[in-house]
Length: 216
Image (cartoon, rainbow, N blue to C red; front, side):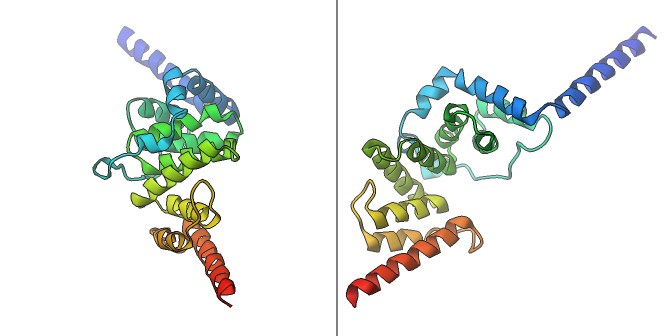
């Protein structure tokens, strides 16, 4: 009887905890997780390095899987899995925290960690974040271009689109329209409906129009 009573109390406790978690304000949860990330000195220090330095070797690449961070309790679970080395958990948690509008330090280190754990899309996103934070910095531009070039070599579509854009404009790298057209061919790996592909196609047409105008 006493054992059954204990099990009943345990069931009530677990149910209450799950119910409380389900009802938790998403913004408060995001803020709480972001604060934990901001307090992680090691991850903050790593995020200050150029992602190109953490670019994974092709043999160690991790595939981008479906988002595991959606649903009650999933974001906390993703942080725990990220801490133990799950690159996808890091990437998707960053993707979930970013729209909350908090400080960059509350999610950008997750992209960098995903990059260092073998997920090349994490490298691309971290480089884009560095540009967004300081677009006029020559160092940020050079780092971003170096990262986009390396990630494009590893077949990341968005990296190829971003690299092609910078090559076409001569931002952080010497302008090279022919190389831009070449790398943009790798932007449609996931089909024409992928924004990386549609963006690349628009940029490609812009470059071709400029070349035709220069020849006429």
